[in-house]
Image (cartoon, rainbow, N blue to C red; front, side, top):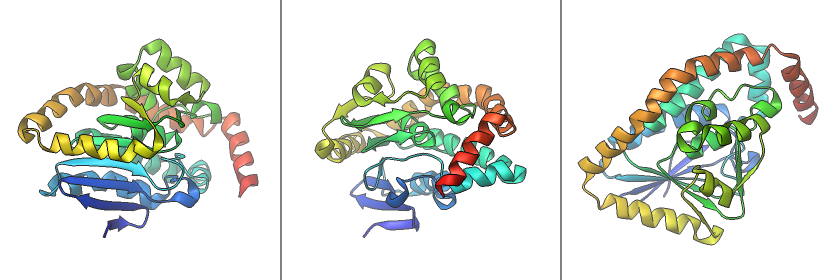
Length: 257
């Protein structure tokens, strides 16, 4: 039986592999508060679990994650204290994933948008279904791309390509994600989870100290970028909530509720 630290997250163990599922399919796995808090804390739990050597991260239903949820977004607009807490939480989530010593393999089963995209590309290896896409839409709704893309994408792809997709918010088809360096493999959807689990089992057989410390060494590049860029980017994202552009987005979102 899968273990559920919060209803919006499920953990299923298959031998040395833990499958972590974003479990809010009715909202396309949008990051409601429970999921956001759970995702900041779950990595330490898995790091301390001696039965687990590798982790596969995927989404329930037809999406990997649609990113932030609209009620939370409206709350952050209206409440400066909630906004500050959300931005701190966004930084902590990315740090927690980068700091997790065990390999995290993404199985991106559907659209990965906004924060969902940032989470997907924060994994160590990324499989993506060949019929889906990623997109960082922060700028398109009036926000600085503070929680991930601005800090980390230039390490994965070229600065010019990172700027193009962050500034436009364009969808990036699966095969383009691979070409850009945001994913490793685009595979048929019906093979996605099996391929990710197979690699997770293969990595679980590797010498673990060598595996984990090599991951740590490589991720120091990511941590350095987050430390250098995220404080400015997140502060600027906070300032976005005072613009007329974000007010238009909020008005549009309120009409959808």
